[in-house]
Length: 132
Image (cartoon, one colour):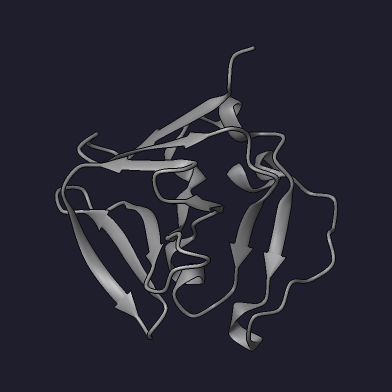
C-alpha cells in the first residue's frame, strides 16, 4: 500500500515541502498574520509528516510561531512552532503551494485566531472552494 505524499513549492522552486499522508483538513485562519498571507494550512509535525527544504527568511509572531517564506520570490511556505508538543515540533504547510488536484477535496476548518484559539463550525466547504 502506497502512502500519499503531497508536495509543494514556492513560485521559484527554491523552498519545498512534503506532507506525508492526506491532511484531515486545511485551516483558514483569520488572525492578523494569516489573513494577510492568505494561506491555507495543513498541520503535522517536523520530520514525521512534514519535511521542508530550501533557504528561507523568517518572521516570528509572538511567542509561538515562526513563519518561513522564500528569500527569493517571497512566497509563504510554512510555519514552525516555537514550543514542542510532546517532544515534537508542530508545523503547518501552506497548501496553496501545491497543485489544486492534490488538495481540492480537503475540508476547510475555520480558525478564529483573531478572537483567540477558537475553531468555528464547519460550513462544508473544501480547498477547491477557496482556490479562485
